Length: 310
Ligand code: AKB
Image: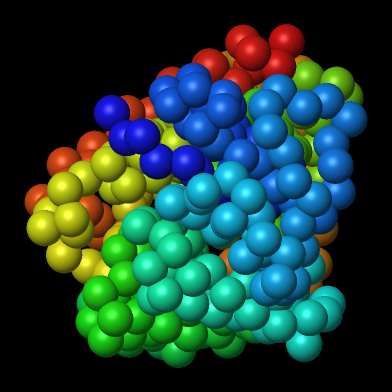
């Protein structure tokens, strides 16, 4: 087991909340330092207030806690980023530069940085999207993630930085709320189905997108970080797949548990973002290199989500 001290940057976000808890269970509370721009009401372990763009404070926290691993989760997601493109670029890139530089200087042994299916664009093949393919993202979030991938690979090749990354699809979980993405509907729909028996979806009924249940996403992330370095052959970011579905299909699945549930559709600006993304992902490299295998499909995820949210 790793004796590293881990810093989670963005610990209050959708992935951060769950990943912090999971890593604390594995490595112990004192080995996992949580950080975010605001102090949470409840703290279950060491916490630091941190804006990742503040390099001085970041480096002080590294020193104070003897941090050797970072999970850099602070970012603006696709929908929010479109509303504030300049800030999205600054936050998404500046944070990555600050962390990669610390790794280059030998302060950090390992870095995790999430990429996204948003690195793909309208000219990418939509079905079974390969690891290596045309990538012309047309959202600011996708552009920042693609630039970030190139930086990660560059820092690995040039300076030997051990940086690891996954292109997350839409993530769905019952413990934390999503924050400003195009795939957020797939979380909101469960809450609304249970509370109001109806949901108005901001994407059209046939918009198919790649998605993943949070327990699979946590397992993928931790497996990749625990894999021996020689097995991590891709240093830009790995495609990983869980499942793919449309709003109509998730609604049908929910109806099996809540027969009165109805869905309506009012597509907004997020429709164009969704239309530019793949519908399904080929993750053969992740499977071959570090043994990735998803466990949940739409049916088992829906059953679990509804049981827990009830
Ligand atoms: C978003 O919708 O922006 C994110 C993502 C797919 O990266 N969930």
